[in-house]
Amino acid sequence: MKYSLFIDDERNPEDVTWMDLSEIWKHPVTIARSMEQVEDIVRNVGFPAFISFDHDLGEKEPTGKDIANWLIGCDLDNDSMPSDFSYCVHSKNPVGKENIQGLLDSYLLFKEHQ
Image 1 (cartoon, rainbow, N blue to C red):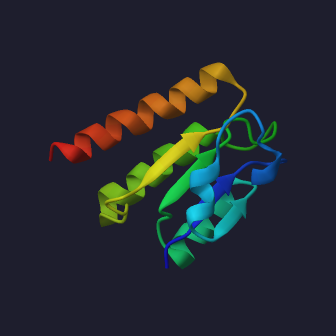
Image 2 (cartoon, rainbow, N blue to C red):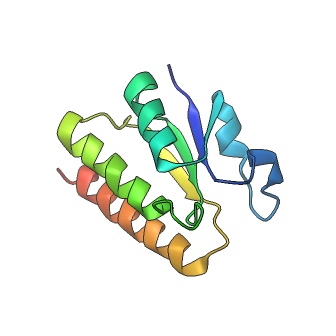
């Protein structure tokens, strides 16, 4: 089943007004508030077709970058990322946003040239 994953500890997709999130609505949307929820969802439902990341997920939670690293590990172990996977980062943390984008863009480029 194709689905979109929205990762944010506080907001819902409709709260993101500073960027276009129209791609998230191409598939049913699941919301995850923590890394633990992301892990449970991905293990039970599979890798999402689209993900929108927040970086800061509460004071004691892992970050969106930690989640991106975990997802890359899942794909390296199981080749689970859909070929049409896409993502965006809706975080308002500019450094965190850049870190997630740099990590995922590098990984997607690596996958493209395997």
